[in-house]
Image (cartoon, rainbow, N blue to C red):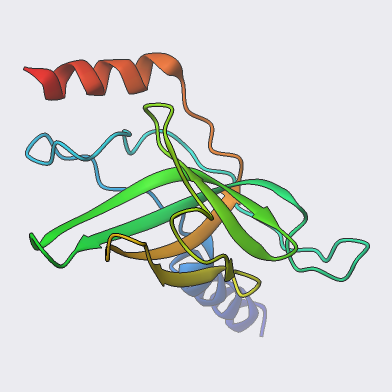
Length: 152
């Protein structure tokens, strides 16, 4: 009886360790892709969604997100890990690592209460945004090293 119980527990632990719940999301780093800004080794904070006092899924503030970009004019397709700003469960700003940003002057604020949203910018570029966690933890050196590599 105890051997059977131990066997069941071991099988359960083995199966649960392979579960997708424990996976973390990273942008693939690839030297052939000049648009890949961050290394896989940089860890993201996994977000625990809790409603704020006003009933919103995401509290107003900065979050780390996977941003998929597609330019239908050129066929360019890239994925970035970037900081975004959320206000009242709406995506309002995407921050680029070079100090630039994409805000509501270039797209209509989208509901991101489900953790994802899609929109088309004023230039016709398509974006899919998925919240990964709290504020991205990037270092200035990782950004500048990647930018220097891409200039060569």
